Length: 114
Image (tube, rainbow, N blue to C red; front, side, top):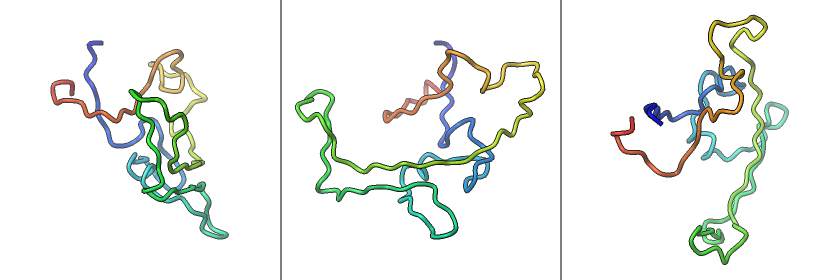
């Protein structure tokens, strides 16, 4: 693939989302303890496991089949900022079929890929 890597710290293509505005920053999505604020807002919930009780699954030693870790269910309401009712000159992100639009990785990329 000859395309350069574009590294961003937010989820691309998500904007106009309740509670997030134009960007959903990845760190905020993954490091927030999602709790309900009574009669105000409820984005979701998390079941947190104490760090010393977590069990990691090593891909090279899969004897442990079930991870014990934090789990969250988060629902975010967004609206299209694009006018999706009218045709556009170029293919828009929500019209793409069969392509990977972005991916999240735990491995850092070197500056030569940027």
